[in-house]
Image (cartoon, rainbow, N blue to C red):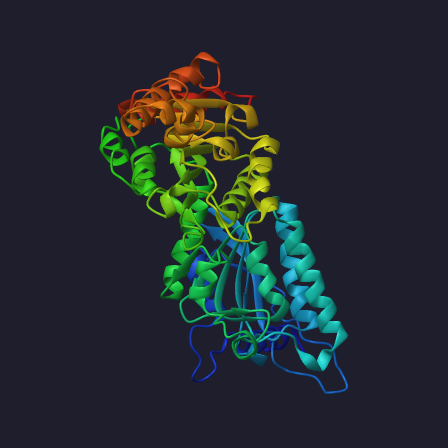
Length: 471
């Protein structure tokens, strides 16, 4: 066989790999084509086949496509499982292809994108396939906080492969996708709970976003990379924020509206938006610099903290700390809500995440900051580099109505008009012990700021720590 014949044979094999099986939906390669800049994708391991077993040899390619290319000009590695080949079942060689591309990404210090669409383990290979599973999971665990990993659950993600979205920094699901460790029918039968669908994953925080189409999912992946990286500023650094004053004057306002006033062009990429809505986490830019934001949300459960909110905020703080992303914290909470079966360890984890973080932490107290909730949300005493407060903020060990009554119970009891006396004590408590001025005098608040200049002051505070050599 001469060179031309050998080349023709290779091209024939490649054409076989590129085929789109009749009746199939979007293929793995088509998903990757949506992600990568046109003509930039380089496939790795295109001709890999499974080893012969007692059950025979498959002429089909392995059910995963792996490689690298440019996404908006940035080097990215990716793999996409192909359900058209053995339902995307993971074999030894399937796993080896994934492992190879992740190891390449580690060496190149470049992000990984995974498209998951697999029925699970290739049972015919037994322990060899299971070992491959373990190698994939181990590597994806190891890259947490080292190189960014964005996961797209495109179809079925079953068994141990369902750990990958939990390991990823940001996970997107298609609305008809399934994600489960145990079969949903089994869970429904035994526990009467619906699980495995995209809505469940979104509400539990496993998925940050649910999309209608593959194109929407890829757009979300690109939005993550945009939010994650620095960009040229396109918003006025001196833009004033008068609307915030009106927003925070509303009872149970949505803090997302405040974040939009602060962020460059009003854009925030929210993380775990369906989970623990009483706290908002996401990535914004401030004068082109990527920043994390963690904010109590009075629109949900009055912004009070619970186990789920602490879990969500701590995970996000740990993510930001891993990648040296500055964190802006907006505080407006009475503290911890009474909670049946409250997990104290999860609550403590949030405070520990702030205290142990080496990254830049700027806290803005926009409203209430009481007790353990105040300490857990980036107080000066628990690790914040800069703490600012609005004139309307209230900072104390207890809310004014509780603290005033606790301290003045005897005076109220002895009063001829206990209701009026109680109101006077509450007002006095708010003006003295709970005043931001009191905290500023003690050095716990660095400045009491004009609401209109919020964006300017956050950027100038951030820039203190972004000088060359400081960050």
